[in-house]
Amino acid sequence: MSSFELAQLNIALMNEPLESPGMKEFVDNLERINQLAESSPGFVWRLQTDEGDATALRPFGEDYLVNISVWEDVESLRQYVYRSAHVDVMKRRKEWFQKAQDAYTVLWWIEAGHRPNAYEAKKKLQLLRERGATSKAFTFKQPFPHPT
Image 1 (tube, rainbow, N blue to C red):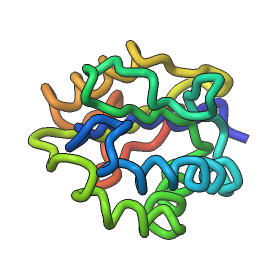
Image 2: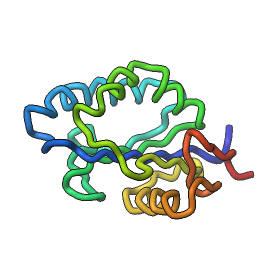
Image 3: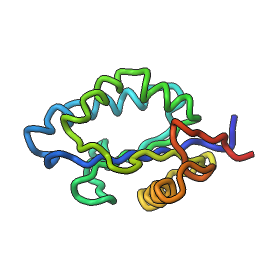
Image 4: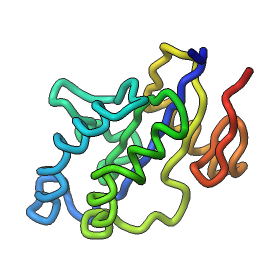
C-alpha cells in the first residue's frame, strides 16, 4: 500500500442559484452520484457537511460549487469520472454550469490519511493555473506519479 493518496478538486460556476428550478435535476442526482463515488474502487474520502454533500461550502464564491475528494490513485478516480454512471451527469453539465474559462479541476498527491481542506485545494488550483501541470498540481491529461 502506498504512503500517498490522490486529492482532487473540481469547481463549477452555476448558471442559476442551487435552489432554482433549473438546478433541480442536478440536485436530485447528487445523493446518487455521491453514493456511486463512495462505493467505487479506490475511493477514500470526500468533503461534505452534515447534509451529506458540499453544496453549502462556497470557498470560491457564492455561485460556485466545490467538490474535494481523495482516492487511492489516478486510475481509480479516472474510472469513476469517465467510466461510471457519473458520465451521464457530466454530459449534462452545460445545463447547470457555465463553461469554464480556466482550469477547474486539479489533482495532487497527499500523504495517506491527510484530508485536504478548501484552502489547500484552492491553493493547488491557483498553482495549476499559474504554472501549468507540475508534480505539485496536475490534471488527468498530464498526471504525475506520487512522490517516492
